[in-house]
Amino acid sequence: MTDKSVPFIVRRARLLLGMTVAEFAGLYGVDEATVSQWERGLAHPAPQVWARIRSITLSASSLLDEELVRASPLYKFVVEIEDLTKPIVASKGIIEAFEAVGALEVANRPFDVAEEARKSASYEVSGTRALEIVQADPGWPSGDIVYAEAHCASPPLGGVWVDAMIAPLPDRLAALIEFAPSKRGAEGCFWVRLVRLKEMSAIWP
Image (tube, rainbow, N blue to C red; front, side, top):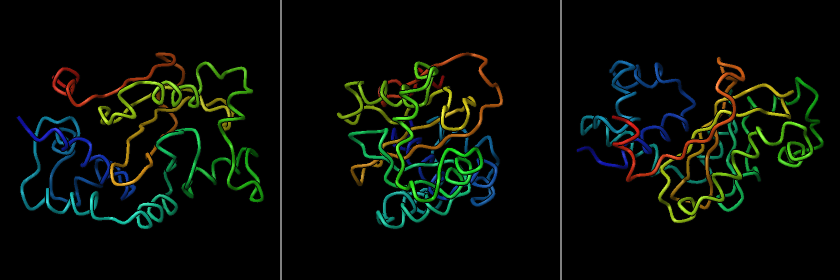
């Protein structure tokens, strides 16, 4: 049995670095399958690798977290842990994506994407609705949720379907959200999956 914190810590380190699974694997001289096993709680990194990963995840200051997110070309937000729909920091990638579709003017920062989603006809399948579901679960404020995944639509990006990951940042009162346009489009419809510590072995057989 591996340390139950491994999946969260490995994934958070990878997201903070703004790396794909392949890039993260290359950084530590392992293959993608090995990183996938770490993120699924099926294997533990070697001691020296684990020390480096933990230092990225647990020793980074809040400012460093924000700067890494702000500079990322990926679609990311840091949000308040008590209001997942309220961005604190947005990545360069998501700001550029919003600007490209005319959903964001520079003067509008910080911006309220949740309010726009709530007014949308696609609210029931939106990312905002997914975040509200996560927020409403009793396991979120108690710390029982390691991370959540969702397949949902993004009204601010013209209704494109995205795959999202929401992870609490245990060293601060915030959470990290990362998402990308889904290769499946609307296939599979709207869903939210909450990954709890006690369920890790059941979800990842």
